[in-house]
Length: 312
Image (cartoon, rainbow, N blue to C red; front, side, top):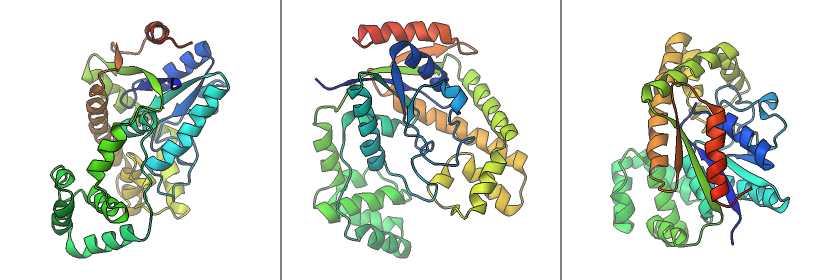
């Protein structure tokens, strides 16, 4: 039988961190972050990375494992996070996979493989994309993988290049690859717990308040420090919500208050996409807050669901 993990998922600002720490205390657990931006060092405020004090002595994994100059991939996350989960299980403790990056969570639990040989096709394709444009590259993809091409927009440059790279490097379409990996048994069993709000307005208010708190805590200074150390504004890390908007304002001498309002909007839009992703999971057991989180009630709900799953 595969090892069993607890997943705590949900949109940004839904209380995942606090609930996970409370459950880790109860269950002799350790937390494995599933946040695509908390992996980066020096990006603490804008990613809502839990401080040492907030972690309350609970071991946390997959935080601060990459520099913001690096392009951190899903494949790298799966390799590193699975080693963390296996180590926690080997120690006889309970892994809690916690975060809002649905692709990271699904890929970790499914054990999907992403690595392909690298003989320079990606760089060549990126150069051809710059010269020929998305429409032409999508037409080329349609000729070898019509199934994937039908799902992509000409402006989805990253996925078009990736699909063509997989085809050229392996001779297998990315759609066939995905079907084959989905047919494999999952790497881990999971008890899925989802956090959300009954009212979307309450989630929006919580997001807006969090952005205000980030600005008060010095988010602009954190972004300024990243730019000062030479991090490329086009780097993957700097595309994170909060960093992209403030970096643009700082570089242009713009209005930080207006940038903060843009961060609130982008965060609300991202939360909607997160909810759409997680609601597709029929195994997710949802606990919905009222106007404010009630962690005692949520812990009781989670404890009952975890016990029913035979964990702890």
